[in-house]
Image 1 (cartoon, helix red, strand yellow):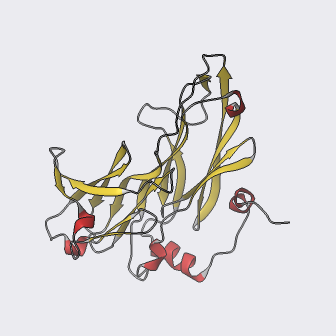
Image 2: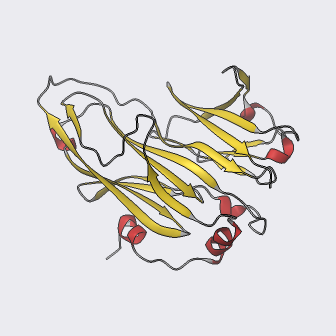
Length: 245
């Protein structure tokens, strides 16, 4: 019988050679913990929606290196967001690898079946997996018909790194048929350029929708970079802060 990813995540799993190299490259060592969202709330606080309303649960994770996140509903896996493939980079160099990651579980039109226990499991190759659980109550409401809108299910909110290390910004879509589009924005919230329109600019979009940012191609005076990720009408900002060693 195959073990679920959730069971594997909470178990003690031996490190691969690549994982071990990533863990050793972290200047401040590994970190993995849950954080409060912009409203000061944790996922573990109770949630209540009416039938037909939008249900959105957010799990905010501080991690080094960036984590993978699994969502459970009444113990069953309902959403899996794998972490970035930053082990592809040269991990012989010292890195910060610090990120604030957000994962969202969305039900556009809540039904009675959406009630129950939801868990967010954050897992990292360098730290023991952590779990946060909440209860969702669905109360009576006006039944309605609504179409599922494409949304962003996981994204990098912020990232800290040395200016010599390429960074992978995460942006994942809930709908495989809806593409991910990135643009760069300045301090005045104006679009600078769309990085996927040209090559050799320091940006490279992966098949997953994630974006690689290579600071060595951005210029020596770049201290922060803000990228905006679009999935349909949904969008989020990801900010990279480059720190001197």
